[in-house]
Length: 240
Image (cartoon, rainbow, N blue to C red; front, side, top):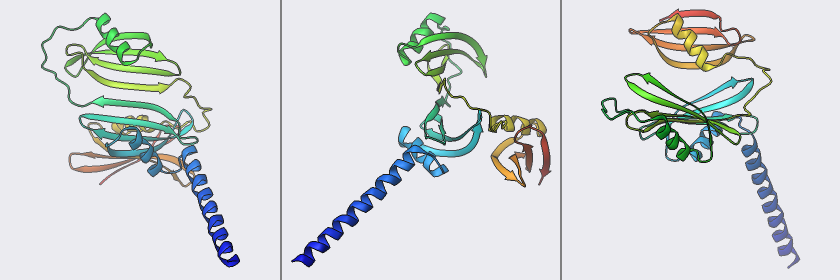
């Protein structure tokens, strides 16, 4: 009888230890992102049933971040998480199908403002600007609410919301790692190889120097452009 009690006690202790390990693991995962797989998992919880196009690891404003690019239906999404605490720093989506043949009358700024405030209730409108972009008139509305700043783009004729983005206003860094960022690296590479298509951008340590390696395709040729991550200087261009 005593032997059975000892066995049951040992099983109970082992169970409690295992539970503690699992809880500790989950807590650690929730508090920090250490891999692209973790970032992808968080993004898919936010945009359910989406497909993952790309996951990037980069420095923005001196902060290590993970950006997850997804697609769902006719929309492309981008979610950026801070690696140190898994906080979602920015969230955006863009509508890929735009009706450029509409002949409707261009809506007024006041109508556009109402639409924006319906999307961001109790937000404060900072600016509304009309622009002509790729064959369509677009209204860009900037707002702020609480700790977030918003940017919304509406088709001026159909009143359809084409782009939606918010970013934390407190998204600041100490500029400890003043890297140029993926977007600027792409622009520099495209300046070096005009009219090319960017296939991949990767940040890595090349013998003690961080560089962006940008792969491009143009007229059947593959290009590889290496760019200094801090200065933006083109270090090497190779064509294959």
